[in-house]
Length: 318
Ligand SMILES: Cc1cc2nc3c(=O)[nH]c(=O)nc-3n(C[C@H](O)[C@H](O)[C@H](O)COP(=O)(O)OP(=O)(O)OC[C@H]3O[C@@H](n4cnc5c(N)ncnc54)[C@H](O)[C@@H]3O)c2cc1C
Image (cartoon, rainbow, N blue to C red):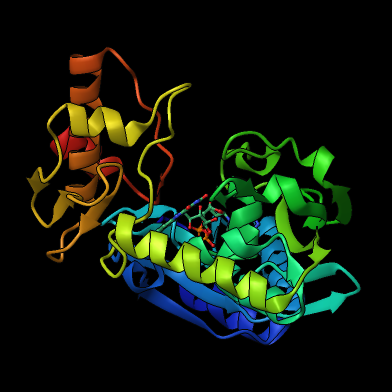
């Protein structure tokens, strides 16, 4: 726990002022798809946009380090955990108005895909492949099967760094390949946060959209290690190539370190199939990166984020 951080007093104040219960030393692994990571000093769930705004403003006003998590499907949390306050976003309201779909940041992308299918709207089918939230998907410009958030996002309501709210268009979010301006936050805490997002979709026959969802489901079952703990693609694809191809060609499929292994099904996935640690995952990922550089002369960049307190890991196992 960080010095001069009184988790008990802060937790009590959060409960009194915002009405949100907090827990101390909450193990975070179960809130991530990789299923690794130590405790948060203090942990709170924001069940709606009001709680999310209030928690973030509270943390900012006190200079309290804070981390926002959605479904933790793009994160590897350090074994030493996360200092300060971790806020899980579970604001899950959504509505369809004409051909627009608006969802709060905590709505899961898979739910957005099936909900819009039911409403006879096409465009969000790729969401079925993304096991994260709308907030995380906007942050990452998540995409799959030839589509991405940038292609359908009409606007997003953001909590700005000054505590005020702004509505920005998709064009203003600086989208690129798995990139948005939200990824370039200031140190010490998140910058702008997604409160809700509105997607511009098109009317289509629900049965046809359902067929597309079934196809996506089948493709994922066949090509990804679904059902095993992972954080999706570990590395970004370098220009004109695929990280998975480079890793496979370097002979790294099946390479294991502790409980983590390079997936036999998809070389750009590391799966934690034997109750490994965050250090196992990171050591393996760093080794893969070094080997790809040695064999192919290509420096892969991480797609996944390593968050929390990695200081001991660096000292002990570089
Ligand atoms: C099996 C598997 C398959 C995957 N396939 C794909 C794929 O096909 N395509 C793809 O693009 N990704 C894929 N991913 C990666 C991941 O699902 C996406 O990046 C997703 O968008 C992350 O959302 P999340 O809610 O889990 O974010 P988290 O992992 O919880 O957080 C990731 C980052 O987003 C930030 N964040 C979360 N919520 C907000 C918010 N409301 N406002 C601002 N920042 C926020 C967090 O602070 C953190 O920095 C896959 C992951 C897995 C495990």
